[in-house]
Image (cartoon, rainbow, N blue to C red):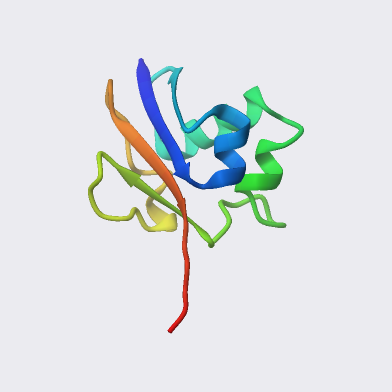
Length: 95
């Protein structure tokens, strides 16, 4: 199934896979998509997306179809559908 990826708000990933790209993956979850991206770009994608424990870095947030941010503990439960758009972005703080 085709999934659209928007990495415009995560510059290191944008430089690696493009600002907007598509992937063709079997049905799966957000975790499956992240592992697919890493498997396609093993030398860099893991460094960009994962923390030292192998989990999605807490500074990276994910949305599906411009809806609310998906909590990290739900990444393995959020099933993707054909033509979903997954947005990766850096969490910025300040005040």
